[in-house]
Image (tube, rainbow, N blue to C red; front, side, top):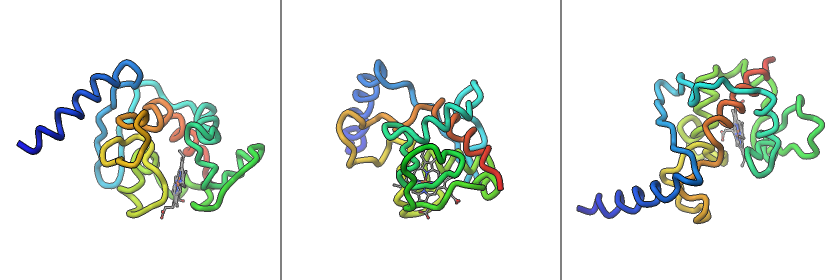
Length: 149
Ligand code: HEC
């Protein structure tokens, strides 16, 4: 019974949110990797670079350094540099790190960019909405794939 009290508001919120938010793509995680792209349209690395630098989107540079994006004013050092990241992780692993980094690095400070469950401390208008769209996730992954050592 208790389960329904949880499920019903989620369903209502999901239905109410569909006009603004896109339908969440189901994610299949296997062996620390999401092998299947989230969208039929391939990721665009140039759009990915924009998403990574944009403070309202990825805001990745708040925590990461990326030499390729040196024209951007601020690069933080909370996380490791993303230079050479494609030599450390394959595409499916990079996709999982962007979607839900807690599945790879337990207790990480990095936020989940395509996950909505278990996020209680987000502002109401962002609840049930991932931080990036599925296409933006693919664009970011496409850009990360260019960062080879
Ligand atoms: C609040 C800070 C923060 C933000 C914002 C952030 N990250 Fe991270 N990220 C981290 C930390 C910290 C780690 C190291 C993992 C850990 O916690 O052990 C990490 C790890 C990573 C890794 C693995 C790096 C490696 O060499 O192993 C990738 C890839 C990555 N982040 C990509 C991104 C992308 C892409 C974005 C934006 C969409 C982003 N991060 C936003 C903090 C952040």
